[in-house]
Length: 114
Image 1 (tube, rainbow, N blue to C red):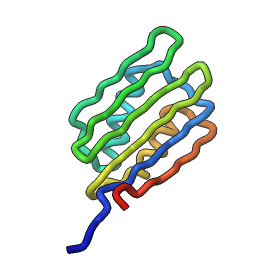
Image 2 (cartoon, rainbow, N blue to C red):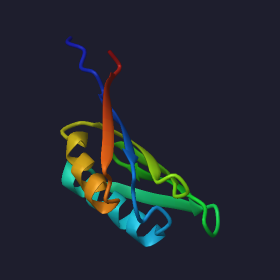
Image 3 (cartoon, rainbow, N blue to C red):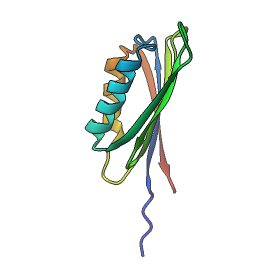
Image 4 (tube, rainbow, N blue to C red):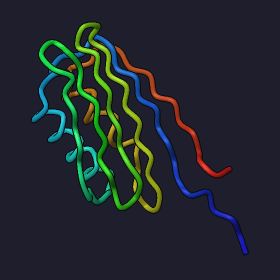
């Protein structure tokens, strides 16, 4: 029997971003990212820390998850995308980059289960 690693986990850092307090935009972007990767959204839960503060949340996927944490005061957002099966989490990167109008990004990939 051949072992197959369960999935790929991307850590996405975006700087100099906009729209980091827009709950509707964040939810729509998470849904679009999941869809373009080939994943199935089961539930999205977001929490705002109030006026002029960030948002944190998670999209629970049949294929794992997408999480997001925003810091509007510094224009920074941290996202992680973990997907298994035939999903390609790399396809989520330009979706987030465009939605938040990021001017700088870093993506780190980790093959999980190796």
